[in-house]
Length: 469
Image (tube, rainbow, N blue to C red):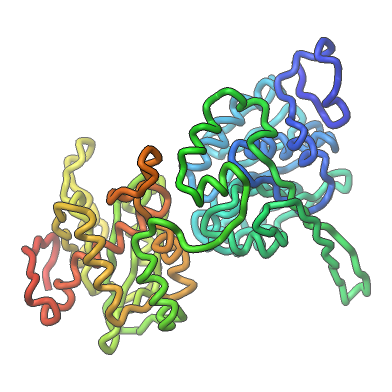
């Protein structure tokens, strides 16, 4: 068996038992020798496969070089599983002597070359990789990172003392996600999604040199991936809402108002009134938190203070695949005054079959002395959404940086789309934006707990767990 390498794409199929062969557009990406390359556009273009193969640097015999080091990043650990799963199907066939360490998430090939997998859920996660070095760094689904912070930081880790190895920064993506704006700006991508190639002059004032490098965007289309022909995937994309259909099927990079977004008007008003800006932490004043223990093993938390009649959200945090102990440690590490109330969703009172304890009981044990309250369940989620809409109109502020991911989620939290009726339903779409939105809804549903004088007409029963004031 063999994996065709650059220069062999058109080889006689009778000569090889081929385990992987690129599409014509994947071949363009694999053969590109520029330092910084983005590959993507429409869904189904074979982006993840191309990134897995490119990480082997076959055109430079990277897989045969014991010094070759590559790392591939996804935004979260659940998303990383898919990439690792695909590598298990391909890498072992390529090199029977290769082994995968599931604890370290590292492939080691017969030569000693290594391909590692990692995730960067939050900007602070980049600091876990200080002191590391790879000659190949790849990001899968780049627009899922709301800011370029992690991407740019990892440039400092792209190095090797072996001059025979190339240094590459690679990324793939669809034209959607919270980081769409910065990705478009960095690669100069227009709405039509056509290829770009930007010369970048690197000025070294100390050495008095100027080096010109190129930043290239290579678009891909579903129609170019013959492997998905006749599978029904195109028909599935045709049933998406118009904006997603244009992005994922046509590869168009249009930005604008999200159709069906629940909080579109409220977020627009927040921006127009300058209420998304720098919001400082007020030392000494209590911090309240609002939690969602949610979808896809993800937990989201908003941190809020009340200062001079203003509701100030000073931080938003989300992670996945972590225990409650992780979140307890994160709360303590903030250094905030945590003497406020910490609001949990109704299902935090449900006992686990494994432990016999509820989430609120576990958090009480991990954070003794903190006050937790269970927010009563509303009969209809839309009721809680409407309560949150109303609450957002009253002296509410968000820190633009510390709440960046949460703000993006509120922009994109939307109704489900019914393709048959070509209309949106009243039911929320459960996706990567849901957790932050559901966590903030705990605030919207508990405003009367914090402001009893302002909401005396709408008292709800109060369920308290843990220590009371």
